[in-house]
Image (cartoon, rainbow, N blue to C red; front, side, top):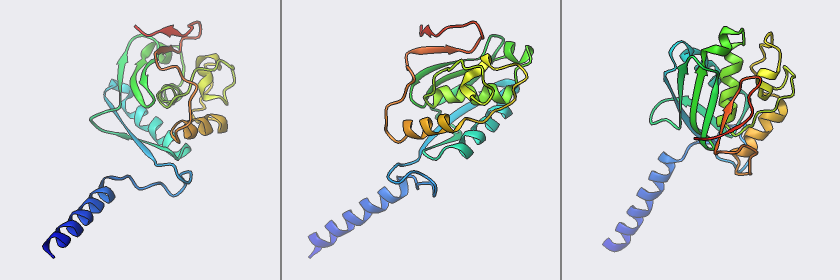
Length: 187
C-alpha cells in the first residue's frame, strides 16, 4: 500500500511541477503553438533603453507565438554605440543588437530602428523595398518614415518562426542597416 501511495505522490508532484514551469498559452496564440518568452537586456542601451521597451511592446501587440520581456538571463542584449544600427544573430531569438547613434543623427526614427532590429532577432531578414509600410525595409524607406509596426506579412512570418516552421533569416550573418550596406558574414 505504501508503494502505491509513493507512486501516486510522485506522479502528482511531477504533474504539479510541469504545470508550474510550462508557460500558459496566450488566448490568441495559434492552436498547438506554445508562446516562447524571450528575455532581453537593454541595461547597456543608454538613451535607447526606453525605446527598446517600446519596441518590445510593439512586437508583443503584433504577434502571438513569442513574448518579449526585459530581464536576465537574456536571450539577446542591446548595446548603444556611435556606429550604424546592426544585429548579430546567434540563432532564432538570440543575439546582440547595437543601437547606433549614426542613424538617429541622420534623422531616422528611433522606435522604427529598434523594432526593425528586434525583427532580426525574431528571424526576419532585411528587405530593401523602400516602402515605409514594410518594417524590414529599414533605411531604404525615407528618413521621414516613422512606421514602427510590422506588416501583416512580417507578423505572419514571426508567428510561423516561433510555431516551429523554418524561417528565412541566416543566423551566421551580421545585419547592418546602413543604406549602402550589404549583408556581411559574421566575424
